[in-house]
Image 1 (tube, rainbow, N blue to C red):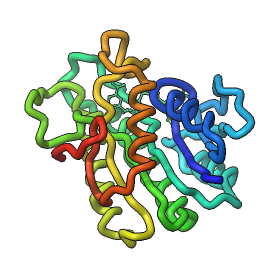
Image 2: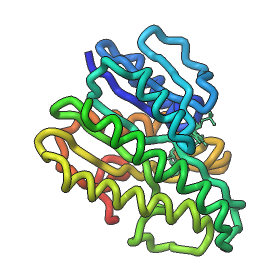
Image 3: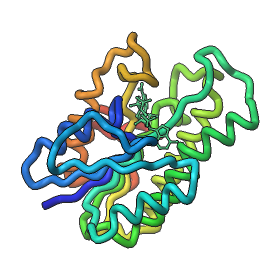
Image 4: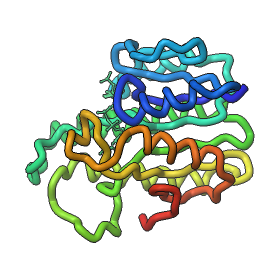
Length: 219
Ligand SMILES: NC(=O)c1ccc[n+]([C@@H]2O[C@H](COP(=O)([O-])OP(=O)(O)OC[C@H]3O[C@@H](n4cnc5c(N)ncnc54)[C@H](OP(=O)(O)O)[C@@H]3O)[C@@H](O)[C@H]2O)c1
């Protein structure tokens, strides 16, 4: 039996990934949403309340997962708070974005590290918008981009800190995907990203890499 945690399973990419993986025999999925509500009635899927902007909520969530050794952790939950054409920095919104996308995500990961199984995998869902090598770079969504770039650096730091044979750490850029965050015009379906995540979980890969559609991409 493999146990995996996926944050942000109420909708979008997290829901598609939880749906795909909980349909597999031998998988137990622990998910989260900010309310604890979810649309996935499966016996091997359990969803708990998690607000990554609040330490008490993170601690509560970790308590709910006690007793499980974790084979994979998919840090998927995130917020994009800017308007589509926003380039200005608003310090409050910058903080709110970092609370969820970086600080809370790191706090949760650090609390779960001692319970990661040997051979486990941590996948941080980041974005091309957190990349320094992006060719079509623009100044939009600054807070989100800063938070995802920092999360990519956490992937690198953790991959160097942890025993490489014990836990693999990856970043994954899903590409522009049809969700509440991505909007209706996006070319990718969340189910396709779920398959990318499943493929990365099943592959034996080098730690500390940035993935997109099954291949390593530049940071
Ligand atoms: N969609 C894209 O085009 C795209 C592109 C690149 C990268 N990504 C990344 O892919 C991941 C999934 O994105 P998505 O498009 O599926 O997003 P989404 O549809 O907006 O879903 C976001 C998920 O995060 C949860 N969440 C929001 N605020 C939270 C908080 N404070 N604490 C804990 N959980 C919270 C939501 O829970 P509630 O329902 O309870 O609010 C929801 O389950 C994110 O990391 C995103 O940055 C997306």
